[in-house]
Length: 396
Image 1 (cartoon, rainbow, N blue to C red):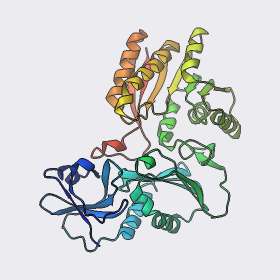
Image 2: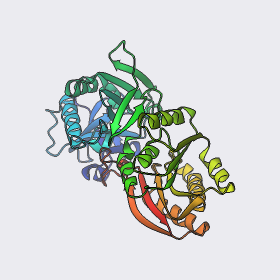
Image 3: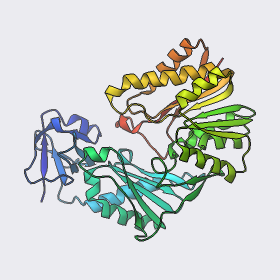
C-alpha cells in the first residue's frame, strides 16, 4: 500500500533543498493506517510527491527522508534495493582511507541513511540504530552488511538516548555469530596499536572521529610535556609519545578508560606516561595550585550540552577548562581544543577561547581549525552532521 503524508503550504522548501527531516508541525495530513516506522511518501500542498522516508508519530522529527523524488513516480520504490545502494556507496567512499583498519562506514544522515551508524574495527562490525524506521529495516541492514563485508562479528550497540524518544528500547547484543562471544580487538592506526572493547567502551569503543586530529600532533609535540584531558583510552597520548613528546599525563574520570590507556602504552612500548583517574575540573585546579606547567594541553571533553537549555551552563564549563588550561600552559605552548556538543558552534567555541584567554591574561594565536575525520562526512545542507569542531591555539 502507498501511504502519502501531505505537508502544509510552504513546508516543502527544506526538503527540496536536500534536508531530510520533516517535523510534526509541518505536516497537514497523515493516513490513518500508517504505523510508526512505516515507509511513507511525502507530498507538498499541491500533492506532488517530493520524497520517501519513514514515519514516527512519537518523534518530533516525524519523517526522515531516505530518497528525494523528482519525477513524482513512486511505483518503482524498493526500500531493500535503496538500502543496498546507499550502504554500498557509503562503504566505497571510505576505501581511500588506508592508514587504519578501523573506520566509520556509515554516518547516518551524512550518508543518506538517517538513524544508522556502522563502525568497522578490523573484522568486527558495530551497528547503531537510533530510529524506529531503521529498526524496522534491521534484518535487511544486517543481511546487506554481511553480504558486502562478510565480517567475523556483527555487534549491535543501539544504546543512544534518541531511541527512547523514538519509542524504542535500548538494544545491545552480538548478532553474528549468534552464540558467540564478543572479543576485544587490537586495531592499528598509523602504526599505533589500540585495544578496543566495543561492548565495555564508550560509544562503539574508540573515537574514530579524532584520527586525523591525532595525526596533526606530529608538528607540535617533539620534546614537549603533554597534558591530555579527558584522555579516554589514551589516543592523543599515544600519538604524542610516538611523535617524540618528552612526557604525557592523561586524565579521565573512568578507571576502565585509564586502565585501557595504560595497556595501549604497553602495546606500543611507549615510556614516560602517567594516567590519572580524576575529575578533570578538579585536577586542573590541583595542577595550578601545585605550580605544574605544560608545553601542550589537549582538551577533548564529552558533550556538555545536548539541548538549548543546557547551553549556558555548558559554556561556563568550557570557559573554566580553557581559562585553567591557559593558566598552566607555558608561553609558546600549544592547546588543542575541541567541542562535540551539537549546539556549541564553531563560533561559540572560538568566543569561549578568546574570552578565556582574556580572563587569564594570555595572548594567543589561532593556528588552525579542526574537525571530525573524513569518514564522518558532513554537509552544509544538514548542519547537524557537523558536530566535532576544534582549534589549535598557541599561547604567545
